[in-house]
Length: 259
Length: 210
Image (tube, rainbow over the protein chains, first blue to last red):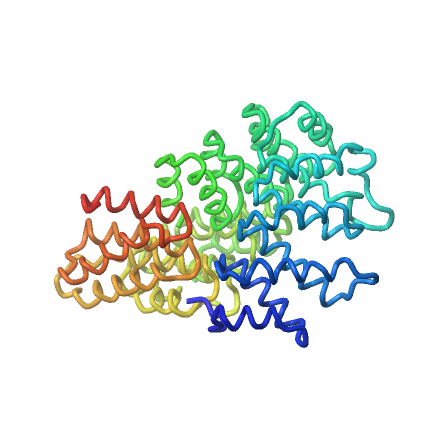
């Protein structure tokens, strides 16, 4: 069995509620998301920890707690988190925008679409351009595009905002665009593009494309996932996603062969 | 003494620098099906390169149960990736000598991929002799433990394994009850992960025990 500290939920809630020990808060925020806590205090306390992001300057320890809280709120699926997370898309902090987009994608919140789309509408030459002296793009494009696909609300504006990123120079940004366009349109030619990326020489790109294929739930990807030069653990994660979307017993058979 | 062909293949492996060269050299070693290659193939599992490790794994599996003692001795305790492949070889060979290592891997390994492969091994070790009743009980105990693991993929493997054991092994009545109770739990809403529920439901369906 995994070696996890035998913390109980009451203790974790108390740890998040105090403020003397930020590392205990940090762990507590992570734990509540990981364990899908249903404790009535969990969401209010996580939302409260986001307030640290409104201060100037933001305290680094409390920023860390808030980032974990954003992630946990995405996992807990409570609608009370929607508006506060949408607000965070306006943050000046790149990572806060990125994590907020990921969590809004998990929450499948259609009301978040305009706010997310606005951040990529400037296209590959602005939002998708590199920041000077940093490997980051100007906007967290991968997370933003993936969130639009996961939310699944298809409109001409959303497709027009995503499509230019299918030609972005970075393969993982292209993968995010193919994934979202497949999710939104159901057009399998985007899936074929993702399958092409499974042959990319860099393992990181192959892994990313594999997980993206799984996230789309497109069963046409099953045999390509099984055959890819990627470790079985990741193939299982991708196939899990396919199985849960499609409920196709063929996918379970493929998973049985990989365990 | 290694044959000239094997010595040449080892030299090619030593010179390899890219993944493609490592894969080709490992394939060349594996294709000789020479028991002398076992230690080298085991070493290759530790290169942290899945493409190469999967070729070495296939090679070790082709060498058959003769490699089991070497695998038990050469297991690198510090390398997660390598341990997962070794456990996978042992699980595929289904050699009962692997039982203790598989049990230990399931109970103590922090890497879910290792616990997953160990669970598969416990599902499939060849234990068809009646004198293996004790080993069969230990395998089933392991599968019941795996069904309570924190990681979904290990619980998934447990659902697969319990189905296997109930279908193909002579499992005692009380163990059968425990196994079915666990499968019912894994198929119910108390299980968070949908794919685990789907797999447990499939197992119950195949066992006619819904």
